[in-house]
Image 1 (cartoon, rainbow, N blue to C red):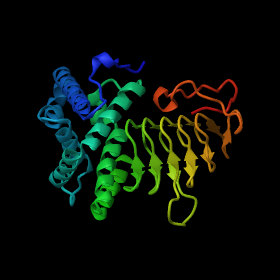
Image 2: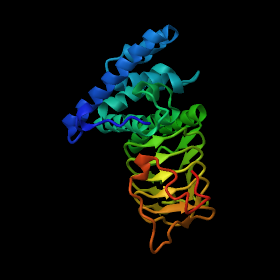
Image 3: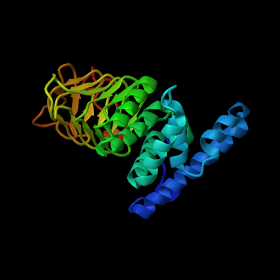
Image 4: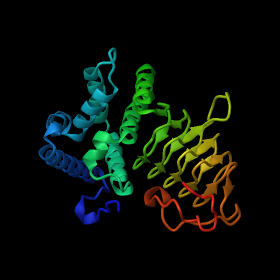
Length: 292
C-alpha cells in the first residue's frame, strides 16, 4: 500500500513559512534515506554522496542531478546546473511544486519506496521538474534555451512537454514514457497521468488548441485527448480512450470515441478524487471495457 502521511508526521503548508518547513522536512527525509542506502549498498555510496548527501538543499541536489542527466557534449552539466539552480532559487513556487510532486509519487505509487527513490530514479518526476524550469524560462521570453531543455528532456526521458504548457502542483507522471503535452495545454493540481498519454491538437491551426485538464483528474495509459476541450475536476479518462468532447466534472470517459459512463445528463459521481486515489476500477463491474 502507498504511504499515507498524517498531518502530524510533517509540517503544514498553509502559508509560505509552512511551505519552507515542508521543503526542509522532505529534504531531511531524502538525505536520511540516501545515507541509509549508502550504508546498505556501498557500490552506490559515491553516487549518493555526490547527488544527494553532499548538497545543502533540495534545489542544489535536483539541479545537480538534472544537469548530469540532461547534459550533452555541447550542453555542459555545469551550465545546466547553474541554470536549474538559479531558476529554482529565485522562485519559491517552483520548489513548492517540486515538493508536492515528490509527495504525489510517494503517496500514490505503491512502487515508490522513498522520496529519494523518486528524486533519483523516477523519470516522470525528473522530466516534470525540468519542464517547470523550461516553462519559467519560456515566460521570461528565453525561448531558445527553453526549447533546448525541452529537446533534451524528450531525448533522455521520452517525455515531450512543450515549454509553454502550464502544469499545476502535486502532479504524478506515472512511468511517463511516450507522454506528449502540447503548447496550449493546461494541467491542474493533483492530477495523475499514466504513460503514452497525448494531450494534443486536432490539426495545423494555431491558437488555443490543446486540452484543459481540471484538478484531481486521472488519465489512463494510452489515452488521447485532442483539441481545446475541458476535462472537468475529478474526471477519469480510461485507458486507450480517445476524447474529442468535453468531459463534465466527476465523470468517467471510456472508449473510442469516448462515451460518458452514466450518461451526460446524469454522470456517475466518484466518491474520491481520482487523481489522488488512483482508483482505476470503480466502474469495471458496470462497464467491462473500463480498464486503465
